[in-house]
Image (cartoon, rainbow, N blue to C red; front, side, top):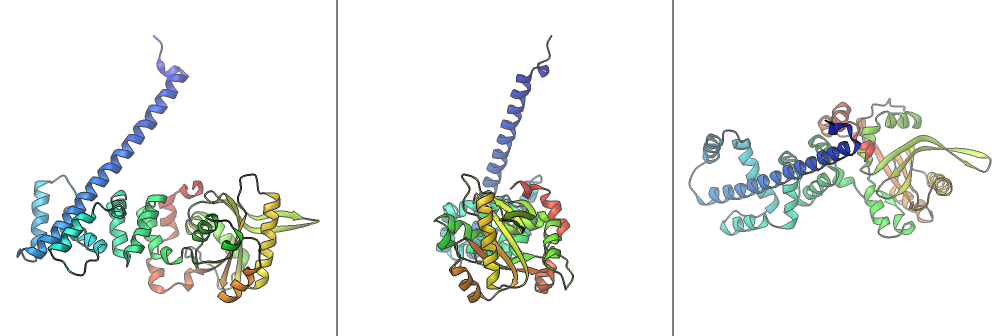
Length: 359
């Protein structure tokens, strides 16, 4: 009797079955998460209403917690602290000025609004982190959406919030609107940040550009996390030849979503106008020598320790290649409270593994 495992077509079919089953399991897990969070939302709205209408006293949530855990001993999530989070979750996104019957009715109905459907599509722990650490609904929904898009773990999500990604994204000084077609210019602008936070670097006070470059490459996983989704690392000190001379690009990336090369130049001091001219030259060389059919125009990012905004805007105004100018901050330049709350490099790398290299 023949063993089916010896036939290549059987092995291929079995592999397809495994992939289909895994896809079904993922979909089932997502569906269960959505239904559970929808239940949490409704329970949170019920709690708001009961506390407003009843005279059950301050021990209401503790009593409810004990009763639910006694009735459903195998189900987690009914601790009194978790019930408080459910109530806080509803109130955070409703931002109602008062808690009355009309407001509670609005809370119940709002669970079906498309914008809040996003909340049910990320894990509960992520929702708690966002709610606790964000100060506005707009900020919170930014992190909800990006968690969905990028699949951030809770540790990475927390790091992004505490490093102020929402405040920094799209804040770089660029000439993209004059040098790139829409909507490429808008997408490219939103890709850049200002400042970039290199909290994972421990450099001596008199560090130079080579120290900075080597430090970023040594911690490439953390560097790619800070750059954002879509950056694929090509190399450092990449050589391009123009005429009879060779030039070295500090760092070269390819952006898989913008479909273009990205040249990153590092400066340890203040931005100077001549920096833009030199980077413009490098971008031209990459466009001529590396760009392939289907690639969009190469983008340059100049990372400097400090900049005068008006000087940067003047310098970029007559540059014909797309360039963004951003500052960067190291650990020693961060506020003390932020410095102590950030995860370590080891924590980030342990959480991410090599995933970002394939992003």
